[in-house]
Image (cartoon, rainbow, N blue to C red; front, top):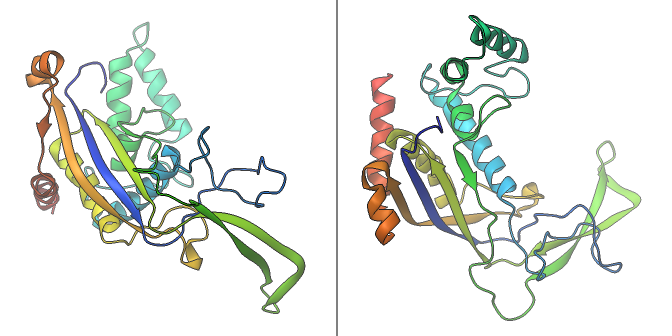
Length: 266
């Protein structure tokens, strides 16, 4: 899967936050800060961790794959409850790859790939490296004035519907209107696989994919603006290495490749 370079694709986008965003750090370093602060870089500017972006997009794409559900090409396992390749099955594949002496890594990888669901083949699993990477998302620009504000939170007694005494807390949010720069790196993905990812991202373009915590309170909603899909192909590798040239791919053409993939499995 990675032993030969086939292509590297970069999806560049902007995330325009329409509501406040709560992507929190574990604890406040400032003794007078909020109980649940926003995560910030060493310069004190908020950012969105790549792990948060990857988790949201993977979860959303898995839901779409379960709706389409056309195995063996388009399906998603439950990675926690019922993984596509269990620990016992992985051990059996290891033993099979050891037959004849030594270890046939290529055989093991191909068998794991064959039995893995679409989501695990793209995002990775305990036995398989992912082919999608999500960079930490910094601010696209630093506007004047404060970037965050403090909001109040309370704990509710679910039986009485009233506030628990003494359980008020404060949490920090990034203000609405903030814009983050998103970069997704895809390695050795076919056009239809890129189309699957871009089709899933359409929900984000429409503002239907919330991010971070407190989402039920209307926090974390924004719209994705895909600016470019740039690709380096093995057939044009020297053009990139010598001149830095990258191929500009059409989002709609890649989505159409995914649609053809779906129709073939129908």
